Length: 417
Length: 83
Image 1: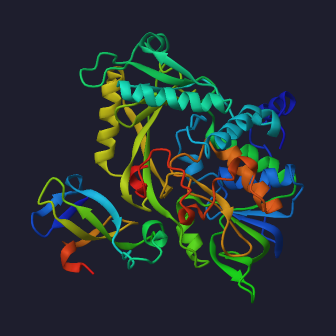
Image 2: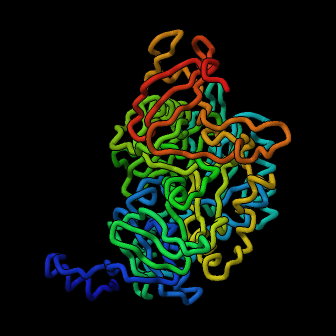
Image 3: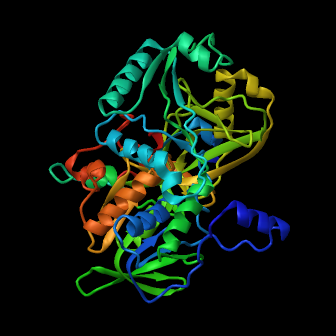
């Protein structure tokens, strides 16, 4: 489906009842070169780059529900690359660069808006840590600006600068960070992949793996029958442990619930993405006007896709401490998504120790910003059996070798990352 | 969520600190620790997990909870199930 002024006008005259499908809703064939389990942003981006960059189009994406109905539809749409560790920064910056060219690349309006991401600091020690992180980012060619109090005040004069306990003394700004329209990202990748021959199969749940005599994965058993596969890629976020268990694999992952919130639509008031440094609270404003915000994960293992009230209270307390002006805004909706928290807080893009199985997992609460990068790097791994140069640190065996990427320094405690 | 602490009675989960799956067993000295420290079954369903009653009796508990429904079906002192 292509969009133009002409077909918009033609469809307007017909009451918008005859728009074609954006992508083909395919039925599964017997065998594919590559089957990707999980039709979220990551899985569809992987299929798109497999087809576009590597010319591999005999690919299926199977999805147990509808595409983009999991975490791709539940996140808070923030894109950024303000990471401080060598294993992370080049990858997230590659993802950021892909975001910057994404709409031209797949010819779809993903509403990528580089309105800036501002992390606030409230103590001298925190400012030192931000200076260090900003310097690490700049050494990798990422934009970072350390702002003093007046610099923050120019961007966001409405903040509670003189909070008795957590006064705002500055912040770290990544001007190229921002937001994107999460659903459009999914649809754009789906159309681009589908147009190049990738089969997108919805309502098709993986229920097991078919193994060869040597143990190699040779196919996926699904609710729609067995689908043969040369290689199988796992891209199932919160369900990573459950699907890996079907292949007898245990992962360094716990599934947790992360809540997000949106207020009623307001006139433009929040200029970019702002994060509170003293508690866990972050906020941006959608183009429709709703304040989109969130905070900590609930902190206990969960597959429930809904959270509990204590975190709602905690997030709202953080918001009120940071910007009391939002206290009169009414909450429109809140929801939860299941995130796959790894033991060091960083993701895994690697071959599994089982032939034919590949992992893209452990994105914790930060998978959305990584969508183009993860798709690109996972496609590279699936096509070439070699890690992409920006994702060499995301190995599964780092939990054996000790080469962990613990951005927050919390140790093997997934609910604290 | 409310946790039936065997010492304090039914208390709000906010009083507790979560540690995680109670299943991993510390290996003997000299054996490999990576699976014990990092690998988890992460089940969707009933799980026994460690919770610490930090704002109560300060006992470590083993709580039986369903990760799909958040239903808590029991709690005992961790020292009673120590291995």
